[in-house]
Amino acid sequence: MIIAARRCAAVLGIPVRGTLGIVLTAKQRGKITTARPILENLRSSGMYLSDRVINQALALVGE
Image (cartoon, rainbow, N blue to C red; front, side):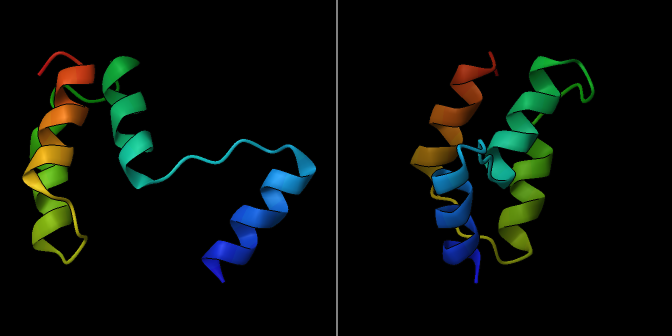
């Protein structure tokens, strides 16, 4: 279902942002002070995020 929705969005030219992107955007816009605790919480809740992905994402927002 998610893949089909992403394909439809691509065909319609609608930008798609995933959970990681939303957290990073919130950090960049000052809506949250730190992204790491949220990412760690997502990971402990079952979302697959490797250490490498988390570290690269955090580097993008200066953490």
